[in-house]
Length: 397
Image 1 (cartoon, rainbow, N blue to C red):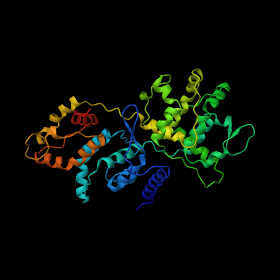
Image 2 (cartoon, one colour; image 1 turned 120 degrees about the horizontal axis):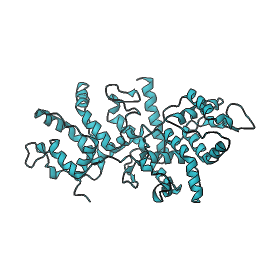
Image 3 (spheres, one colour; image 1 turned 120 degrees about the vertical axis):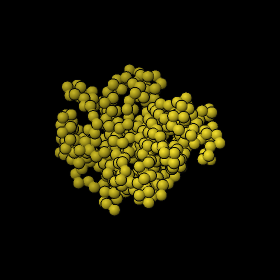
Image 4 (cartoon, helix red, strand yellow; image 1 turned 90 degrees about the vertical axis):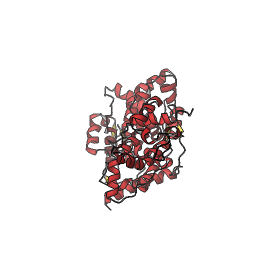
């Protein structure tokens, strides 16, 4: 087993274990729903167990770690909700089943609970931090004029020292500290004629990596911050008055128009860019500027990450059309010769993951039947999957 693979698995195990110590259980299925009706996970990392137990890791890799015969689940591949994921799995299944036959791998069914855990885990991969570039961070420290007010390696009585930041291994700590001081910091920058920095892409992680390295001073012990608990983040979204300004009174911008499908440090950068205008608005409406402590920043950002991921369109009417267009009626007609349930006997599915699980577990039988008829498996778009789900659940209120 390669060292890189061992490191990958070990990292996921450590993360999952820390989650457990923080009050999670690895196989919890309860979820919470926010305003849009989309469910939130309690522990996005729990699906790594399903990823290994179901043999996904034997063929698939994550950022290069794992199997090499199937697509890599890198940060560039994003499955923001179950409709995206089951569509990709369904369309990929003919080649996948062929490879499993070649390798003599038994295909395993996935129940509703495991499918939910798996899709949240794969979804969360984009959120998890990518490593920052120290050289780029050094350039940013100078370019953004951080060194005008801060010192790192050497003490300077005229500047605010960042020498203690080296103990914090997570960029989220820097994000939290910067946010708590953002309003004051940005006012001083504008007063001094310094352009308030705007972070793009991975720049926040780059800056954090540089500060951590040069201020470490040989410190071996590091303080880590968990990726975040979306359910706790949802509570913070209300208690910190984010909900009041962004949803209830529409004082701030509509967050449903923002793309939060980014790494945690990119989202932290977006929050920093928003700090000055937010502080101005909160002063006007006499609302206290929110500060974060402990793991609160991570929890809030993880909530924002999952917040806008239920945007797939679909309708029961379209699902009815697809029943014929995709050939479902050929096997699921009343009195069919395949002993398959008739269309009206299918469903309802009390939850999307129940439907996803049923589709996945139905694939081998459907493939064999399609090939016996000289036909290929019909392709499904994410919107097709949602429309079929809504059609089979049309009688559920």
